[in-house]
Length: 168
Ligand SMILES: Cc1cc2nc3c(=O)[nH]c(=O)nc-3n(C[C@H](O)[C@H](O)[C@H](O)COP(=O)(O)O)c2cc1C
Image 1 (cartoon, rainbow, N blue to C red):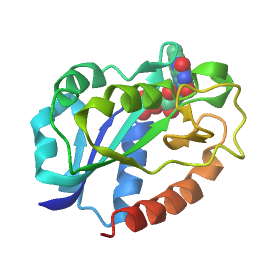
Image 2: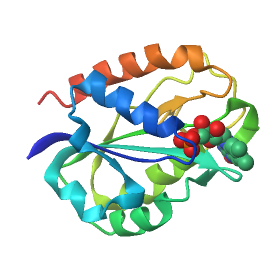
Image 3: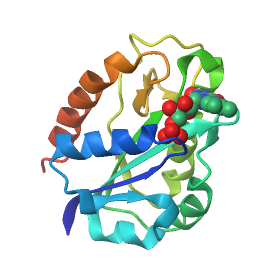
C-alpha cells in the first residue's frame, strides 16, 4: 500500500496549490494527489495515510465538490488508516474560519481512522472556529486571503510533523 494519498476540493485553486505544496514536502508523487471532484471515495483504500483538504465557502461550509465525496467516504471502514486534515479559509470570517475542516473531522470520526496533524492555534486571529477542538486546530489551517506569507512555513512545519506521526 502507498504511504500518502492527498485528496482535496478547491473552487478557485488555492487548496489545489496547497495540496501540491504538501505533496512536495511529503515527497508524494503528483499521481497520488486527487481532486475529489473527479475521484471515487473507494480510492482511499490504496493508501495508509490520507491527507484531506477543503476550502470553506458559504458560512463555514464544505467546498462544493466535497459533498458527494464525503457521503461516500464517511461510510467506509478506515480503521488502521491515519487521517490528517488541512484547509484554506479566511480568518476575518470570524467564527466560521475553516469550518469545512471541522466538518470533515466530525463526520469522519465514525470511520475508525486515527486523526493526526493537529496544529497549534497560536498566531491566528480568530474568535471560534469549528475546527478548534480541545485547545488546538484539528488540522493545518491556512489563510491565503490575508496571511499568505505565512503559509509556506506552516506547510513545511506541518509536513515534518506528519512524517513523524506516520513514521511507524
Ligand atoms: C463567498 C465566500 C464565502 C467564504 N466563506 C468562508 C468561510 O465561511 N470561512 C472561511 O474560513 N473562509 C471563507 N471564504 C474564504 C475561502 O475559503 C478562501 O478564499 C479560500 O482560499 C478559497 O480556496 P479554494 O480556491 O481552494 O476554494 C469564503 C470566500 C468567499 C468568496
